[in-house]
Image (cartoon, rainbow, N blue to C red):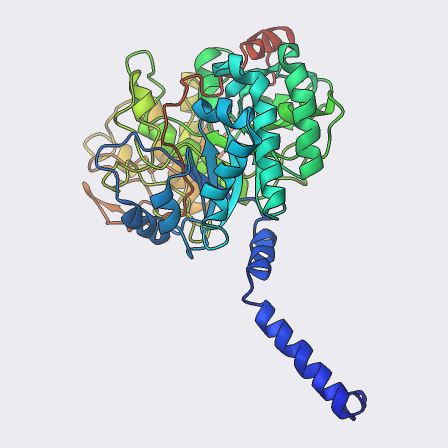
Length: 518
C-alpha cells in the first residue's frame, strides 16, 4: 500500500528515477570507492615493506602481478617510484609512499616544493593507485637528529598540499620512529618518550590527533632479544604459547603480556598518554625477524623467522588487541618482502625477506586458517614438542607418562626404529608428546605436560622420522603452492638502527619483581 502511494504521481516517479540513477553512478565514483576502502581498512591488516637493494628485482609490472598472485592488499614503499605506482593502478592494493630522509630539507623549508611533491607523487596517481598514507622520513630522530627541526614543517607542508588538492581525508601523513625514542619500556605502564625529543613529539602528536593520522613505530622483538639475552626469553619474542607462570606481568597494572610486541605497542600508547594524547592509534610500520645471521647472530635462523612471522600474522588476525587496548589490534607491515642481498653487513641485514629476488620463497609460512593471506602453507597443522632447557628427570617422567598412561604411540622411538635418533630424552619426549597431542585431536590442554611442552607450527619431522600429523612421506615432502598476501617498501639507504628497543628493558626486568614475568 505504501509503495503504491509513493509512485502515484509522475513527479514522484521522476524524482525516484533521478535519485536511483545518482545512487547507481555513485557506486563507481572515486569517493564511493574510497569510502569502501576505508571501511575495509578498519579491520587490522598485515602488509609488507618492499626494499629495492635486491639483485634482479622483478620489473614493476611483474612485481605487481606477483603481489596479486600472493593476494597482497597492503604495501609500503620507501620512496614514490613512478613506474611502480603506475603499475599498481587499478589493483586495489593500498600503498604507503615515503619521503626519503635526504628530501626533508627541501620539503621542510618550502611549501612550493611540498606542493610539487604531492602533485608529482600523489595527485598524479590517485585514485587509480590507492595511496593511503605518506611516511615522511624514516627514524629521523634517532638516525639523522640534525634534521629533527625540519620533520614537523615537512609533514605540515605536505598535509597542507593535500588539503589544497582535497585529498587530506584520504591520504594520512606521519613519520616512522625507532623504538628507542621510548625509555623505561618495560613494564609498559612506566614508558615515556625520551625528553630530548619532547619539543618535537608534543606538536607532532597534536598534529596526528588533529588529522586522524597514526603514530608510526618500527618495533623489533628480535633486537629486544639480542640486547637482553638472559633476561627476555626467546619464546616471549616469537609469540610462542606460554604457561601463565612465564607470561610477562606489568606490576603496576597487573596486565599479563604473552609476547614482546604487544608490550612494545602498549609502551607507545602509555608514552603518548604521558603527553596527554590518547586518540592516536599505533601503526607498526616495520617488524620482522631475519632468517640468517653471522656468528654473533645465531638466533637469526629460518625456523625463528618462520615462527615469528607466522605467529605474528595469526596474532593480528585473531584481533585480540593488546592487554592495555584489547579493543584495538594494531596493523603491521612485516619487514620485508624480498631479501635485500645488496645490503651491507652484518649478514642479517640481507636476510629479512620472505622471498628471494627471483620470487621463490625463503621459507614457507605456517598460516593456514588466515584466509588467503600468505596461504603458502598447506599443512594446516600444529605439533607438540618438548621445550628447551627443562629438567631432564622431570622430562623423562613426562615421557614415561605419555608412553604409558597417556597411551601415546612410542613404538617409533624404540632402538632401531626411525625416530630413535637422536637418542636423547628431549627428542623422544617430543615424539611422544606430539603423538598424545594428535591422538587428543590437538585439543586445548593436550600439549602442556606441566609446562614442559609447547605447540609449534614447524613440522618436527626429520629424515625418515615422520611425526604424527605430518604430511611428509619418508624424506620427501608434498609440494606446496606459495600464495601470499603482502605489503611493501624501500628504495633508498636505510638506517641500521631499526627499532633498537631501549636497554632499559633489561634494567627494569632485573629490578621488577625478579622475573616471574619472563
